Amino acid sequence: MTADAATLEQLLTSIDGRGYGSYKQLRGSYDLGSCRLVVDHVQVDPFAPPSLMRLIVGRTAAGIPEDLLDDRHGRVATTDFLARAVAADLRSVEGVSVGAPQQEVLERTSVALTDDAVEARITVQLPASGRRVRGRSALRLLTEHLPQIAEAALVHARLDAAALRAHVVLHRDQESLRDQLADRALVAFVGDGSILPRGSGDSDLPLTEGAVPFRSPESLRVGFDLPSGHRVSGMGIPEGVTVIVGGGYHGKSTLLRALERGVYPHLSGDGREWVIARGDVAAVRAEDGRAVTGVDISPFISGLPSGIDTRSFSTADASGSTSQAAALVEAVDAGASALLIDEDTSATNFMIRDERMRALIPAEREPITPFVARVRPLHTERGVSTVLVAGGSGAFFDVADHVIALDEYVPRDVTDQARELAGGPPPQPDAAVFAAPRRRVPADGALNPPGKKKPATARGRGTIRVGHEHIDLSAVSQLVDAAQTQAIAHALDRLADEQGKNVPGAPNGPGAQSGPGAPGDPGAAGEPSGVRAPDGLGEPGPAPRTRRTLGAEITALFARLDDEGLDMLSPHRGHPGHLARPRPLEVHAAVNRYRGLRLDDPAT
Image (cartoon, rainbow, N blue to C red; front, top):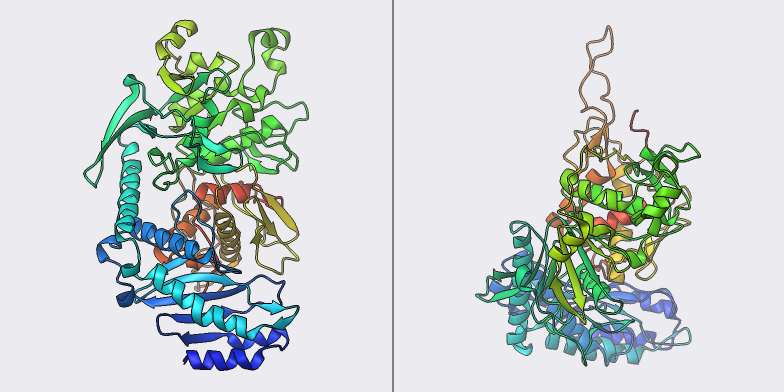
């Protein structure tokens, strides 16, 4: 039932000066004329997380042109534009937020389009004096300021219509180019004129003074025709092994960081609008001290003096080399089509081993096979490309398909010179190196630890708390927004819910048939369930339980996201909280770094 503005005014006036808990009476729906205000959750005290509210405008009143909403990319771009409009108007309103959109255009829950309405999901710090209600201040906020913002930011007639349309057109063009990369056998594209450097180390805004616009070498220049009718040209990075070289501070790592972020579309004016990578490109680095559970790192590390079987390697405190080997294998098994690696964030003994060290320590005494010896089989056997920054060693010239040199931020194709130094084209592997991906099936209750009483929750961009454990995601560089981290926290809870199901015919229960897994994932562990009658009995017995691998579970979760939307991750009805869609790769990364993860023996 929806009350009117007069009812809300009467309520707030009556609780003015009373204890803060009196605000709980606000829960409900109110017709404020230009919009409807829905109060879904009221904070318990002034220092608790803020209240959750929605500003709702009917689709007819909002008047958003339907041609902007007739595909997924149009809806994502439109709601992103509206969220930014709401955020801009809220800058002058203390204690109210719709989230903080950054330079990337992401699917978010901040603004939603339903069949009959447009709604802004906001958090509100309700006014207080100490622990007492400031009812008159709340009245002005809820009945004056918020309706004005709803009308200014959610109604098409009040918006910059040309800017909205340009925002949608750009987003559709960017995603169209991304969709063309695989067919053109490209890992990524960097448009001519792009501005790659950022303003400072703690800013993601473009450098405004002294930045050198990117210009492709002629040998690597490609062009793309876009749905808008425009055409863009720039450097295409081909599949295979690409090495980026150059002197210090000449732009190598800047280019690689731009490619890392190129998995997301960027705002007009960001400078990286036309830095577009395939959506499943993964950055990999060393990460001393992380947990690793049941990962086959044997292509890189084997024959350890301790006798540990590295075909199913686990540790609570990985070294630089073991952590980077695990991260690489995890990314490939999760479906990455290409890897981005910077020598500055890599373990040296994982990457290369020079002639003098090989002479001093014979191969049979060294458990590490360096990445330089595996980068080509990774491409030929698994179809995974590598883009690598190397400034201190030419070891990768022997195995590179392309070498790009940055000289004062200007790229040159130096592949021919590098091959002359290497003595010829890259060699072909003699024998297969990489085995089929290992089945990794979570043990019962592994994602729902004992003593876990609250939902998993994010602490900023880099940490998730699950029960008493903290998952450290600070090294996961392609996680760009705290709202993505919160979505991953909810995703872990949804995965735990699915794992906990043990109902006949349910996705994870007895009698369940397993579906296909993620790219490179072998799917379900065990045999498909059947019906077997015990000896001497005509009635069928219970079917054996069939459980899916982690990859298959995450694939199924993202299929639900596609069908039901981002709201399905949230445990809350109505306002879901501020979430942004993560990639499957980052959900895999969170599960793999969870110290409570336990796996079933694949032989059972």
